[in-house]
Length: 95
Image (cartoon, rainbow, N blue to C red):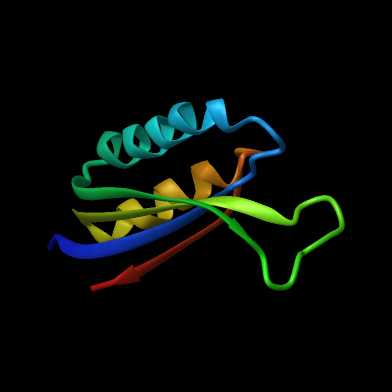
């Protein structure tokens, strides 16, 4: 049974904002490739962290995605994107 989800991704910038389009495209292709139906992709933008996780990373680029998918899609996408060095954090919740 398909359910609605919301995903939030924090991408590492490291001074190269031109790579954001490519990374957002990679995330959406990963979701669609696993059978998710995208409803909304919102680029929230660059945000400073209140509590930096280390001295090198003080900000990230936030992307919010809403989609409809089977629960197994979350596990597949999450495990694949963990391997990407550009994805600092990913979080999913059911709507």
